[in-house]
Amino acid sequence: MSLNGNINFCIKPSHSIIGKTCIPGDKSISHRAIIFAAIAEGESRIKNFLQGEDTLATIRVFQEMGVSIKNNGDYVLVQGVGLYGLHAKNPTLNFGNSGTSARLLAGLLSAQKFSSQLIGDESLMKRPMIRVVNPLKKMNAKISCSKQGTLPIKIKGGQNIKGMCYELPVLSAQLKSCLLIAGLYAEGETEIIENTATRDHTERMLANFSHPVAKKNSKISIKKAKRLIGCEITVPGDFSSAAYFIVAATLASNSNVTLENVGVNPTRNAMIKIMKLMGADIELQNERLESGEPIATINIKSSELVGIDIPEELVSVAIDELPIILVAAASAKGTTRLSGAAELRVKESDRIQSMLDGFVVLGIKAEALDDGMIVEGGKFNGGSINSYGDHRIAMAFSIAGVIAKKPIIINNCNNVATSFPEFVETGKNLGINIDYV
Image (tube, rainbow, N blue to C red; front, side, top):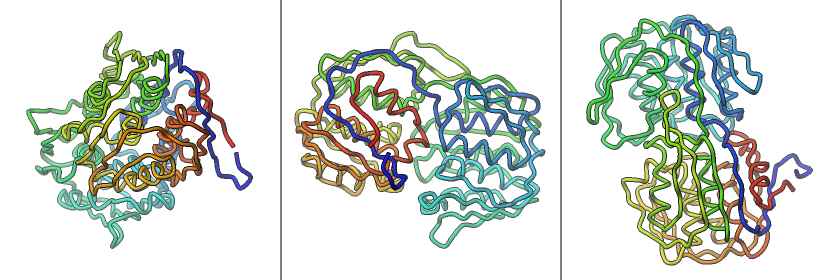
């Protein structure tokens, strides 16, 4: 760790990546488990909860709204207060860096008796929120955001939320989930139309809490809830976190890695399809359901990759994995083309520009597009990379360091703790030559 408090990584070229490990709990599912447990009746126990800064922010916000939550590291125990049991002594709720928390809770808070204001850290205050504000207004919420369409979000409590039929204008599971949560409180039925499937953790999670969501073709429907019932949830390993070690094992020579108990939800695992199209040797074993979510053991061996045109229908499902997929593309033989990924421009950083900047430093030929990138396969040089405070950029370029000619320094890695606090230690255990500097 540097003297000024910034966390930086140093990755030196590594030998074979070999071993077996478990991946920490899924961030998206951990958020949702806390949200529904908090407004359920009775006790809920959440196992393998992700102990990351984003998910801990969700816990903190609900504790501020009067929910008893005990987190001992092995599991989280939530004493639900029911659909209408929340209250807030301080109406200003700080979500840190967690865009998921802010967007999903905008739907929940729009239906509460009390008024609230949603804020976050410097990065979160710049991220787009108008996408949830406008449809919530259509549901009769009294909600507003800044003129720039960002936080702070201000919500007036005591409104009578009404159901509606809404077609998603952007591919966003966070927007869909926000409206489904508001739909728990809305008079009548709330119908959401998504022409391309986005991650369905909210729909699966609600079934665990005894309020099933109906789905027919592209239409998802939810009725006003009388109550949710507390339950036990086991959170699967986060596929997005597993993705870094899938690529590391693919690129490093003579590697063989087994990742246990990883979530392989079909609305999340398109990265496996993309990597297989590039020639990766990836096998799913012991596939099963746990708490309504598909999980499996993933085995990965070294492979020679080839460049491809990434099928656009897979892009939205692999949106969080695209930075590490681009690292794989930079090591593949030939050209890889990515398009249809404009959403990358409005993540924790502009991930298209962030990846391009890193590739330039490391000697990889690449061209940024408005909605993607063209990457020519090559060899990574060493160098110093700015992650722009984006956890996925930091971890993606860390994996590039595994096969680089010389060490790679990744700067501004503090936010890796938002999704994968154990990233460095997990990498070391598998043979990756990574450490703090």
